[in-house]
Structures are given as C-alpha cells and as structure tokens.
Length: 485
Image (cartoon, rainbow, N blue to C red; front, side, top):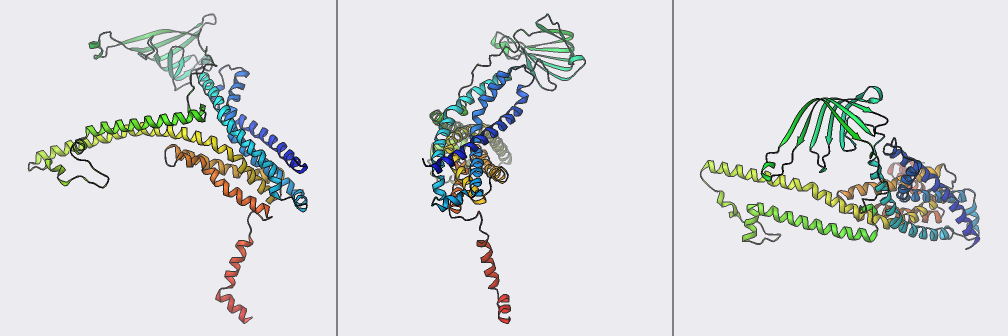
C-alpha cells in the first residue's frame, strides 16, 4: 500500500468511526425514549436496561452504517478538495479513480462483513431482544392500575374507570376477570366501587368491592347439560378478595419462548420457511376452492358434465331449468339465488383477511431475505456518491456535507420504506421492493463518479442555458433585429 493510499484511508477511517459513534449514540438514545413506557416504573436495574439496549443495537447497524459511510466519505473528499490536495494529486498523475481504489477495496470487505453480520448477529440480537421485551411486558409497573384498560395482576385481570383518594386506593366502576384453575375466564365480577387495603406485613393485597354482581359460567360434567349453558349470578354488597403478591413480578427475564419469527432466522432458515409457507398457502387455497365449489350448484354441474378451457363459456341453456310461467316460482327462485349469492360473498370475505395475512407473512419473509443481500452493495454505492459529491462541492466539515448526506440518505431510506410497505400487501414484488432503492442509487453513483473524475460540476448550467439562448436567437423577431442593425 502506497503512502497516498494510507493517508486517504487513515483520514477516512477516523471520520467514519467518529460519525458512526455519534450516529449510533443518537439512535440508541432515540431507542431508549421509544421504549421508555415499557421500561419505566418496573423497578428494573441498570444491567437489564443495558441488556435491552445492547440486544436492540444490532438492528440499528443497517441504518446507521450507510449514513455514516455517506457522511464520512463526503467530509473526507470534500476536505481533500477544499485544501487543494486533490489538485496536487492530479498534478502528479493520480486520478480520482486511483484515489478511490484503496477505499473501494475496503468497502468490498466492509460489505461482506455487513452481510455476515446481518446473517448471524442481527438474528441473534433479535432473538434476545424480542424475548426480553416479552418477558418485561409481564412485569407490572409497581402494582399500578391504569385507568380505562385491563391490568393483569396475579390471577385476575382488573379494569377501573377512575381512581381517587390517598395513593389512589379508591376505585370506581370495577370489572374483574378471574382466572379459574383450568385457565379459562369463567368468572366475571362487576362492582360500583372498590378499595385497596394493604398491610406491610401481609404478602396479600386485600381488594374490597361494594355493590356488585359475580357471574360464573359453570362447566357441567355431563355433555347433555352443557347445551343449557349453566351459570350462576350472585349479588353482593361487600365482597373481599385477597391477591397473592408473593409471586408477583417473579418473571424469568432470560426465558426464550419465541425462536421462530422471520427476523430471528438466517438465510438458510428463511428459505426453508418461505418454501413451507408457500406450500401451505397453496394447499389452503386449493382446499377452499374445492369446498367452495361443492357449495355452488352451477360449479358442481359444470364439473360433472363438461370440461372448460380458458376460451370456453357456459352454454346458454344451462339455466333453462328456472324458466317457468308461474310468477311465485320466479320470485322464490330469485330470493333463493340472492340468498345464495350473499352467502357466497360472505364466505369469500371471511377468507379474504386470513389469505391476505398469510400472503403478507410470506412477503415479510422474502423481504427479510433479500435485504440481507442488499447490504452487500449499499455501503459501496453510498461511498461512491459521497466521495464524488465531496470532490465536486469541494467543501469539508459538517455543514453542507451533513445537509447533503441527510437528504440523500432520507431519499434512499424512504424509497426503501415505501416500497417495502407496498410489497407487504403484495402491491409489488418483494424482490423489486428490496432492491429498488439500490437500483436507483447505482446510476446516480456512476454518473457522479464520472463527472467528478472529469472535473465537471454537479449540474452544468451551460448545458441548459446555451441551447435555450440559441433557440431564442433563431426566432424571426431576433433575426429581423439583427439584420436591421
């Protein structure tokens, strides 16, 4: 490696590490505020919060690294141009392509490293983060009962409309769902008022309810009695409940119950999942099509009596059996036909949402798979754009380069975001959605690099100005003025 390559690489790496550290710190702070409601008030120690942020950090790399590469390259080559160091290089025969040679090789290896990082570290971080977040959700915020929503405390699920009094111990309009030993919600209690009483030496929390009813669905052991839906209703003026707090918030935060979401899977696992989901989806569609066809008299008749191709149509005499002179029969047939059509439409609508959700799940798997490959090229393309722009604008520092970097990155990011959202509902192909922003960047990077290499500006005004002036001069009015003068 020559001295000039080491100099450029050193200047670039210093800026890249500095920008990456600052951007990562900003994104981590933003993440902390994003999940502050899930972390606050639960008595978590600092180690758990640090684990939460560390597990989430790998997901930020595909977002922070491209922005850091773009800004660092723009700052580096803008500074070199601003200090006339590029002019000195060119005077000795070193072109822009030669100056970029060492950093292009570096970004090739960086892209490969990012690819392996996204295939191994990010799925592992997602696994740990997702399970830790689910486990933290089981922790109650120091027994706080929030108004207007159901709060799970021990073996009950309680909802209150209003709290008041000292330490909010008085409750108004209380609804409680009590879990039975079979883990079914068979008991519902409604009361006008309630009061929380807690003895510091007692592990139980006493809840006293006033003026309410207790409803219970009774599971009969005999099958014939279950159809009667037996239940019990009891009115009470005062009802006391003891809530066992000894096991409250005893949650294993290291427990991992979720291991198979698409963001936790590597490339080989995603391919297997996609194939499995697609086969199951096709089978579900075939089963629904077959069952739906059995319900239709016309479809059954066609299947039993003829074979249609794409260009064939139903015969005109297929519906001759409804021809009749009696008006009441016509009316009855029309009502039956309308009822049958409504039932068919209802069946189709009932399956539309499950099929849409299943197709969306398949598309999410595909998008996650293709995005791992796009990370191979994003860093190189953004580096070329940043280096070319820096050489063109000849401005270093964090002023104009920062503005340009943010604008370019936001354009790239939102193109990818909008295309991904469109691919989720199958509006466009997941493959196209994943590669769209990269494909748009490629010609932009090539054009900028060529213009920077030939010492041309970002936009040549003369290319637009002089053709317009020549056309204006060619107008008859100006020709007469020139001849008269």
